[in-house]
Length: 179
Ligand SMILES: [Zn+2]
Image (cartoon, rainbow, N blue to C red; front, top):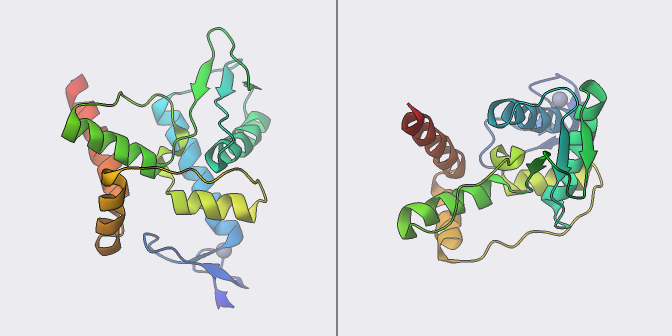
């Protein structure tokens, strides 16, 4: 038991290498959810009455996306669906790791397409695992195969923030190319 630096309560704290400081369960989940909501606002601002389709591949990412969007639905008038709907916004269950690999594949091989609306792009796969465990959401662990993923995991051991930096950089490039 330790004092949580955010809420100052003495509780069990969770630490991940890339996190600036350990947090208690409640603060950790709030921090992740806040990041996802901010990402939704910047990637794909929702308007009243929008239908959002959760692309469900049975993964932990899909379970987490569903949980967070359902909570958003309570604060904001959107409709959630799991089947195809005309003119809907499709939320993809893609975490930071998958997005970083996909960006590097694009840089190295010029293959792979631009990722669509992926609110979990700012959430590390280890955070996905922890969040779905703490909230008891289930879902299958996603396997990302290939050399790039393996190299990235190795480099990450020395540079804990690496995947976050790659995604930040890929966004900067996008912004620049739009100008
Ligand atoms: Zn706390």
